[in-house]
Length: 178
Image (cartoon, rainbow, N blue to C red; front, side):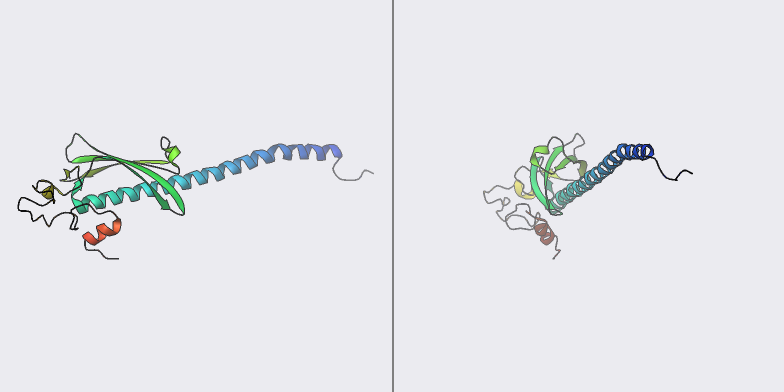
């Protein structure tokens, strides 16, 4: 009578199959984890770009002017430093301005950002290179006032006539506290 069980050859074949398939399964799992991390970073970069676009739109709504040109900066979001680059250009449509915002995790990745956003800003805006509201840029004095030297009540809501620097300044100029 023969005892039931696996022979040594059968056990070795089973171990060889497991040894071949287990690394392939682990590689697939690692690839999924890497893809999830990439998608998380890409989503967070999109939020940073949208936040910057919203900030730019608030500044334009508050000051009623837009400056064409390039800007860049660093922003901390979700305990990480994000680098952004924005470029605003006038278009052939006159009152339409193109805004391109790129976001990356490091300054070295400027040419290969995680996220690129292209948007348009519309409106009856004046391009003012000094950042002053249109009513004040036509003035005559060095103090930035109008022809009568009194200045204008329109613009950013500050006494200096310069655009607000932060979101909080914009909120105060719009009468929003908190």
